[in-house]
Length: 107
Image (cartoon, rainbow, N blue to C red):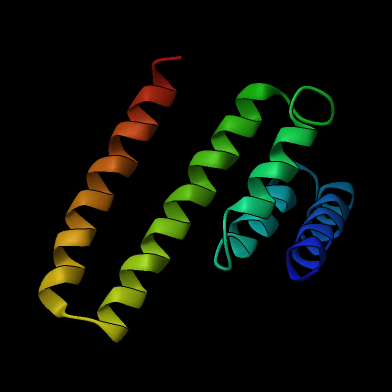
């Protein structure tokens, strides 16, 4: 039930932002919702890709929200865990983010 509520909230909010603010509003609302998790966002993107937004736009949003989610995890690790671990996580996260966007640019 909890996941269904989160999924519906993500769908409603991101689509409302898309209608009101356009693609940029959709990106920002997806970015903010990625702080709580990725599953609902990925399902929402999969449903919208190819119909409401293009596949390339969906991929770009996926890269943005994945990057934000990973950076939030680094913040959590810094706040709740060891600083050394958080810095190692930041290093690996940076590599993942950079190569993700490089791959996107090569499409």
